[in-house]
Length: 353
Image (cartoon, rainbow, N blue to C red; front, side):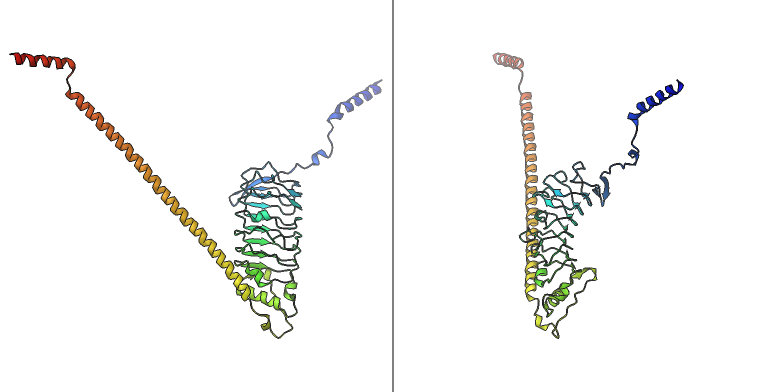
């Protein structure tokens, strides 16, 4: 009887505690990570690195200026991806395998200065990035780009200063004629066959060039070594610095390179580029001068109008005061009707007497 009672109690306890049992793995589960905020060079920055995100978060602060969204699973970017983040200046989207970017995706980012799209699945440069008015740096390395990289017919940019196209499976240098202020170009790790001085002359401000990992440039496309020699000559003439200690090793089956000609054509292109930059600078300066003149004239007109109105106001006040004083004087010289009657009677009596 006692044993039966104990068994019933044990069964009751087991059934009563069962709903409150906790999975043994519950305490081993990690708390989901969230994007974190921090300050970087005085900017509001957000770190969303490696959070397995499949889309750009839409619950971040709207005053975000720098967004780290590297190493996630964002495959597509859409028109509303950055609609809330109009103050973005730096955008890092490396290693997301981005395959599709909808037209208009980057339109809200009018303050964007630098974007990293490295290690994705892009086949060309997103043209609308080049249209952004403040863009300075674009990183497209480690994408399998089509021949030409999508730069043929792409928008020009006077603000672009740095372009990285490393390891993009390029065999020819894209035609980069719309970027005269480009200072730094990285095309390392490709399979470039040749680069003509005329191609580099289009970028007349170029100072840093990374050609490492392109062995065919030294070999050249011709056995006389002229392509390599002319490229090396142009780099030396323009004082362009080759990055990563890269050196062109030109060889020829001739005794020398005198038969290769010169870089006069490239020099003409370079001079035309520099002239275009100078003309734009003059136009900008002229606009500034005219703006200053217009603002100055407008300021003078506004100040003159204010002074005129102030003068008119004071003049009216003085006139009103003068009229008021005259009225008071006239009132003081006129006798009341009763006194006027008394005076008339007195004058009549004096006359009769």
